[in-house]
Amino acid sequence: MVYSIVVTLHIIFAGMWLFGIPLDYFLRGKLKEEGKLDPKTVKIYLAQLNLTGMLASTGILLSGIFLVTSAGHYDFFDFSSNHWLVSKQVLLIIIFAVIGGMMIPAAKKVRTGFGTLTEDELKNSLGKVFTSSTIVHILVILNFLFALSRNFM
Image (cartoon, rainbow, N blue to C red; front, side, top):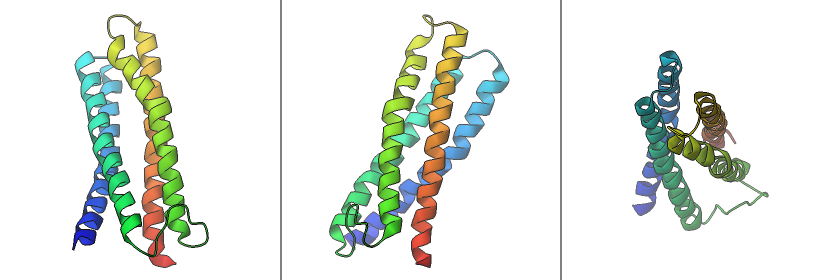
């Protein structure tokens, strides 16, 4: 019963992460069409990115750990079987590295830079947020495809 609930939550968190992708691009479009960076719109964009990213990634991580540890036929980084799961685990580590190494520092610079940085510096930092976000989106989609691929093996 608990396992089924956690699987459901894992799927919901994955859906949340996938839903964040079109929302991200919609808000990026709003930022780009405004021309000049509006602090309010930037804060909304960063808050959306932060909220969906934190909820989804934390939910995926915790539920994934529970699922692997409670199921007797899965293991962490077991390269001898369940290649789809190992691929997902490696991708999740890369996702967290991109978030921690690129996205968070750039977003922090943008968030605190209004009033101290030039418009070009803000746009440059925001561009780094966009780039790191795109990388995360691609990896999330790949991770999702690996999850689907287990049904074909």
